[in-house]
Length: 236
Figure 1 (cartoon, one colour):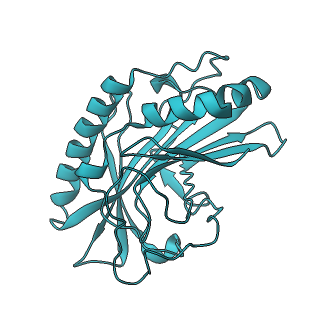
Figure 2 (cartoon, rainbow, N blue to C red):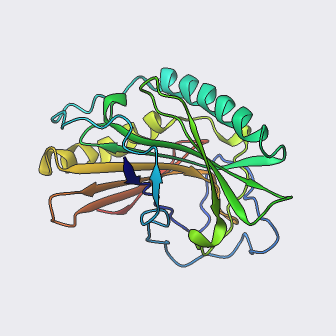
């Protein structure tokens, strides 16, 4: 089966908070406000095998979100597994993005895609993707030319010291700031994209998008700091 991997990344200006220094790759001025956000799904039109691995019918208003401590531990296990599998192909690969999509609920039963995406300094023209289903199916690896994504910014390595919170922590924050109400307004007709990334000149954040699939076009977008949990609603 083929499915779209939906990724939403926001470029917002620097903020105050507990997360240490903004990281730059030298191509961007880390003190410059980018003037808003990048409102797009750069992977949204890319069809990849291995998606829709665990999609189920709607689960109703109860989110089904798992315990944040357990989710964090699971993500670390998945990251190690994904990294080991990619380094067997490209030993200098670094993790630059984690992308999950949930359909009609926030439990593992509603997890549609679960990707870990890497870059390599010695082979910089490609992204290395690992999809890890939570259904017991084996992981799948993909090689994608960078121009297929056409991101208007650079992604930097996700560093462990700035990754203290899981997507469950991020979703809990957004749920209390409109996520629960959004799901109630679009029962069994929504999807949630959750992405961990470090765009050059920015902080490491979870980028969260609630999107209605009932034709209304409604969206709720937020950033949640992966280090300190600082939350900003970008669009509602």
